[in-house]
Length: 156
Image (cartoon, rainbow, N blue to C red; front, side):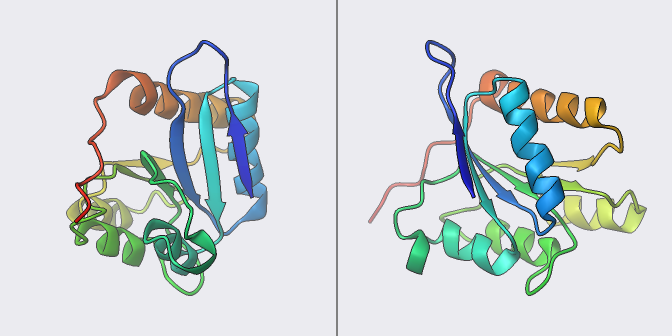
């Protein structure tokens, strides 16, 4: 799924890679972008293996844009969120991309492991819809308008 929400005349479009295996959660996130009119290119992959293929522009993802931000679930099949985080943060071409762990887990060991692997933020998914949408809007506002995002590394 790729959804692009663009508000004409608004801020630059933020390219977001959503790594989420739960279709219902992916739909909630997409709906939050639409409901809050967040200018973004939202690109969804269902697991860590696909995320790495997207980030490295392999196979079906050869034309994928470089994301400005990664929203990463932890508990996924094939390659866990922790494995994706470690792979991204040790790859010279990818490590500057901000990664927000966005998961249902509030377990201290998951939080500590994520920050130890250099996650930029750890957000526990809210249980109610209003809070869910508000959190997505706050993430977008911070990374889409407030912070200076790193430029892509030079190509060789």
